[in-house]
Structures are given as C-alpha cells and as structure tokens.
Image (cartoon, rainbow, N blue to C red):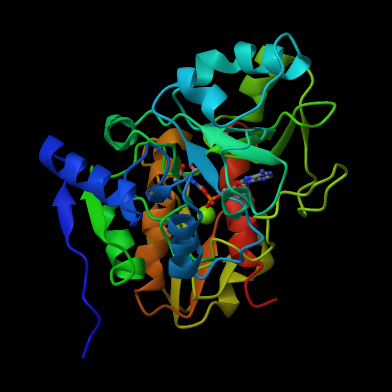
Length: 335
Ligand code: TXA
Ligand code: MG
C-alpha cells in the first residue's frame, strides 16, 4: 500500500489555525516564507525537531533556523548580553527584519540540543511572509524550519515542490503561492569577532556592509577561515539529478543530444548539433526575477529528461553571489 499523501491546503486563517495546532501537538507543517518553503516544527520540542531530520534525511549535525513572528521575541531564543557588541549589531540590523536574514547568536537554554545540533549558538530569523508570521503567532512557539526539500535536493519555492519531495512525510502543506525571493536567507554569524556571512542569500553582503561596516565571508569553496564552519555548507547541495555545468566548461559542439540551456538574459543559441531547450530566467535581465525563477526552473528541467543542463554564469554581485553559490554547488554534483 502507498503511504498516505499529505494534501495541500490554501493558507486561510482556518487552515493556519489547524497548522498551528499540529505544530503545538508535535507534528510537521510545510509553510511558505518569502525565501523558500519551510518544513516547520516546534523549536522547543526535541521530539518534534527529530521528525524534521528524519523526514528530510538530514544529518543531525546540521543545525536548524528558528523562526519568530516578531523581533520582540528574540530574548526567548537567544541569550544576548545587554549593551554587548552583539546587542549593538542586532540593533543595527533591525531594519532588515522581517526579511531574508538569519542571525547566528548565542543560544538561549530553552532551545534544545536537537534544534542547534549541539551548538552553543542558534540561527534566528523573522520571516516577512504574512502566512509564516501568522502561523508562528498562532502556534505561540518559535518554529524550527529548514527548507522543505529532501536533503541536498533543490529548495522548494511552491507548495507543489514540497508535495513532490516530502508529500508522505509531513502532516500538512500550507499553500501561500510562489515565494517572492526564491533563494534561502543570508546566514550571518554574530558570534565571531567580525560579523561573518556563512551562507549568501536573499540579503546581499553589500547591504550588510552598508549597515555594519566590516563583514567577512567564508571563501567560495566553503572552507572557513573562521570556526565553526556552517555545517550546512556541504559542497554538494541544491543538486538536480541531471548533470549541470557552466557554459564556459563545455564546447557547444559537444553538447549531448538533449541539452537544456539556462540563461539570465535573452540569449542567442550557440552553434551546436544538439537539440537545445533554452530557459531564460528574466526576459528583462532582472536579477531579482532571475532569483525567483531559478529553483523552479532547475526542478522543471531536472524532470524534463535532459542529458545535460548548461547554465550561463551571472556576475557575483548582489543576489548574483547567492545564485552563483547555489549553482556552483549544483555543479559539484557527481564530481
Ligand atoms: O530561507 C531560509 O533560511 C529557509 C527558510 C525556510 O527560512 N531555511 C533554510 O534552512 O534554508 P536550512 O536548514 O535549509 O539552512 C539553514 C542553514 C544551514 O546552512 C545551517 O548549517 C545554518 O543555516 N545554520 C543553522 N544554525 C546554525 C548555527 N548555529 N551556526 C552556524 N550555521 C547555522
Ligand atoms: Mg536547505
């Protein structure tokens, strides 16, 4: 017999309350955020959190982000000394919350080891999506949520993506439409001497530097000059099953017969003998729209029976850094 398949329900206030009951009861709910869909459980309940790792097939060494309905709740999950440097940084960053920024902060005792994978720090974010905030508010507890995909696959930007990957492993999927950012949050550590970007995402590092001044980042191969390394930065991540390469890495005359080409702006088709399907992420050449379209396009092409996905690189500026980070990891698959 096939396992039961979860249904997708629209994010009405009635369904949000039903989802909040499930969270309080120790269950799993997928919900929309502005970045990607999250797989949520009560962050204070070690048994509920354990279900997240099991559903995703996620290594238990990889800590989760704790989501709050409002920044005022921060003291429930993080232990920040008043007037400390960390307190000042958090204050300076308040203009970016709610939004796609996760802060790694000293952890509050209320957060169990399972949620932080035993780290003394905790990643926290206030999402901007109204459904996410309504759900967390109605549940009355912080919600731990990784992206709602099977570990190492492409993050979901629609409710249907969640259903395809995890449909039989959770209790409810709230549908709030496609995600507006389409890339995960930027993870910024505030537990180092200098604020350090552990994962590029929806808030560009340039914007953080405008606010904080000095901001470090991990080197692009994922190795760290600072400890601890963000455990989620596995080299192979966000990977389609189909082989993916950057356009500079392969001569178009050597494209296999079924090749998909992903471009960021309207593009010429290269001279090749293969049948090339072209997907342009933004007809206007707009990087924000390209980011929104990226994961859905990769999923669609991955299901399309292609032998190869070729991606045109984009400049590593603004959101382009996060996009190139995800694509570099996707291209590392099978190497
Ligand atoms: O946009 C997002 O951040 C989405 C939505 C659902 O909010 N969530 C998400 O979660 O992308 P996840 O689990 O897929 O990625 C969380 C990242 C991982 O790279 C993890 O290692 C890092 O955050 N992280 C979490 N807690 C950390 C900690 N205490 N120290 C260092 N890195 C941490
Ligand atoms: Mg993820």
